[in-house]
Image (cartoon, rainbow over all chains, first blue to last red; front, side, top):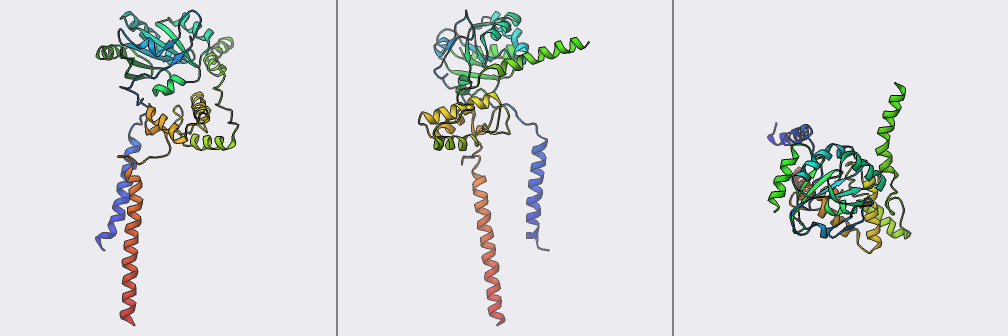
Length: 174
Length: 141
């Protein structure tokens, strides 16, 4: 038998092996934003509830780096991250919230139950800001430097071990 | 016990209700008046990936975020942007991942090159075989 006849078999085994290997690899479910190191786009969000200011890009410019926290009152992991946001606030970090597809009374209810670590909360009723900054879910947290650039994205809820990481990223963004 | 279960179920139902209680974006479920523009929108929406339900296109998905993406597609088309401009706007934010239409790039060029290469190889083999048979026939006669 000529050796050339083995080439298709070899190719088949290679692709079957590759497919088998890739199937056993864990799949990355998160879609990372491509907007890291890019300036925050211009935006203006109406207040998400009465008695607190909304959010615009200008609120991120000047002073210290800040956190932009995308959350919602209907989001269960957001309850889990609430105490860790509170800790970040106690460390002196300004956290600007964006409430996604939310109603003022639901936002108010959530804040009275789980605390309010935010200096302002904008309402993103149709995911406009989310799409602008490449966010694909709730919650997500972004480190924004004082020049208004996006420096870091954390996908998912903030856990105890995320707090020092975010403080480090905020320090790097100074 | 039953009452407790009902109370628990009510607790679970609340957040879902809150999310669905919000009205969808204006163009999430509303077609454009211009049928030609709407056809363009559908064609584009079928090739954009829903970020919350990653094996569906935003045209197929009922996720609120897919509705918000459809709103962007329709309102941007209405504002005069081209479908490819809108696709570029999204890939700039989410990477190639958001598009179901592969672009030729440094990582995807083999997808386009290999079929051409295979066709070329098949053509060469056929040419050699057929050419050989013809010359065999000629010598046989």
